[in-house]
Image (tube, rainbow, N blue to C red; front, side, top):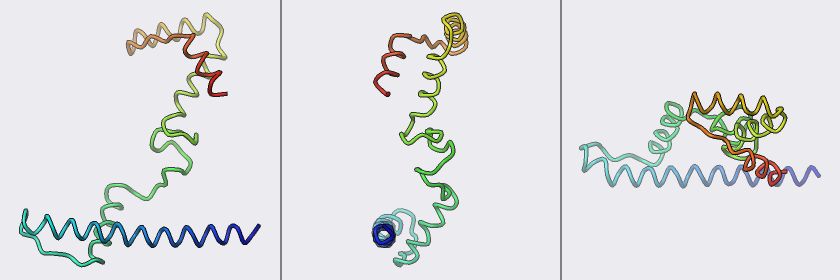
Length: 129
């Protein structure tokens, strides 16, 4: 069992290093092709390209993982991208009384112009389960 995790770790490390080299090389080539001619900037080396990628990631993207926990990227802790809030709303509607559902639909229609179709919600919940 341990050997399996060690092999996965080594494979992940190798893919990470290969990804860094690939992205760094592509970034360097694009920079050296476009920037000197468009903006009269100097050409860069491979390591300067990797450094610029890391700097850009730190400044604009952060280092959160797309598959980690939390509510980043619209999934709110669920494994499927964009699935969390819809799933919770459907579950909430399925657990409501008909009067509560009508009140919620009325509020959403007034507030957002959204009209829920209960049959579609119920069918989608059955398909997901």
